[in-house]
Amino acid sequence: MKLTKLSPKILTLLALALLVIIAPMFFPSSFYYRIGALIFINGLAVIGLVILVGYAGQISLGHAGFVGIGAYSCALAPEHLGISPVLAVFLGAFLSGLLAWLVGRPILRLRGHYLAVATLGFGILIYMVLSNEAQWTGGPDGMAVQATGLKALLKSMGFKVSASEMWYWIAAVVMMIGALIALNLHTSPTGRALRSLHDSEVAAGTVGVNVANYKLSAFVISAIYTSVSGSELALMNRFISPDVAGFLHSVELLTMTVLGGAATVFGAVIGAAILTSLPQVLTVLHDFEHIVLGLIMMLVMIFMREGLVPSLAKILRRRPK
Amino acid sequence: MLLVEDLWSRYGRIEVLHGINLEVKAGEVVAVVGANGAGKTTLLRCLSGVQPMAAGTITFRGSNITRVPAHRRLGLGLAQSPEGRQIFTNLSVEENLRLGAYLYKDARVEKDMEEAFTLFPILKTKRNLNAGDLSGGQQQMLAIGRALMGRPHCLLLDEPSMGLAPILVDQILDVVKNLRSYGVTALLVEQNAFAALSIADRGYVMEIGKITMSGPAQELIADERVREAYLGI
Image (cartoon, rainbow over the protein chains, first blue to last red):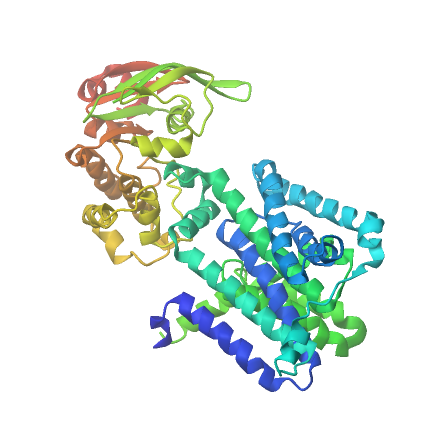
């Protein structure tokens, strides 16, 4: 096969670009643009988790907390600080990174289930703050988010696009940038050091890798990815509620990561695509929707333990011989 | 090169090392032999900095490194090939070697890699394979190759013969024996006392956390007590 001569990095980027460009040709209505945008937004968060879970081998059950920070930054900062919603994305990313750095120092000394429980606690804490500080956040009812003004800007330039269409392309571009960074990281010396943690922290230490620092940087980077995805979600929906920071969303993101294949960027997007679109597709099954969803997840984990993309790639590679 | 004085260490409340004294001179191959549970691995873990010490000092090339954290010790020239090999199974053979040279970014990395491939030609043919797909012997070669990529003055080897076929044990130990021609001093810890002592210059015998005997390796092999206890002769 000629394709294998291209590096996995280029291959992944090409595949993602194709997916982004071709998919709209099959969209019967603008509703599908919205689903597409949601997939790319989740995809971005999951790529962040790939860096943490797939590369560095650490686990987090609280990453939705960073989604919440990103989302509420875009809701609160324009209202109280008067900065533009687009700038608030960067503010949210900065806050998430900073918080991840502060929390990560003590938390990342833990391993396995202990780390899982500590991050779980962190996520719940953020959720509690968001739903209890009602005078700021509107509490469990959520709050409205100011318009970005992007659509009006496009309109003044003579482009007439629906909001869903616009967000489809924005989310796609942001995700592609995220994918590019993650893929570059994979093959860089820093990425190698990160991946060495996954296999053996002791050995990583013996070759001179500063284990604590690398774990922390993976945590911070993934927090920033997740925060940006939360911001996009808030800006697209023009409304935000604490549920995005909830435990279920953390689990959802982690499930997407593992389902697609925790160690690959392409798997991240596929995992996000399946778990975002499947519930929409499965609504035809009415009451059985969740049963089928659960069943699919179990079957993938039993028969494709490395996740969908790596397992399928292995099968394809084996066939020609 | 390496001087250990009155080293004590414990796991929780259980004391494992009771005052170890040991010296490795430049250019030597030194073997520490002893039964399972004697504390050999703990000793190496202290030397590489991943095991806290209760008391004692470690001097390496004239400076006190007792409090230097693990990831800094390689930079000073003290490399380790850890117990159970601990290679990075999800990375390729080449990536493993490159990680060994993690501290360096110069052209010598490529030269060192060629040297590692000369030392273990099998690694070259498998350079793009996942390290997890290698056999036990090849993984051990990779672990040693990776440690050498760090340009050590002194290499600590923990049970390099563990779980290997006799022919591979000979091959690996042959490499260890010849390390000095690369300017590397070696301290190896082994249960396989006969194999280790036959390639070493000097040896130490360890029993439940203490050094009970030491001397030139040939003398230890010839010693009645050692032969009886460890060599099964």
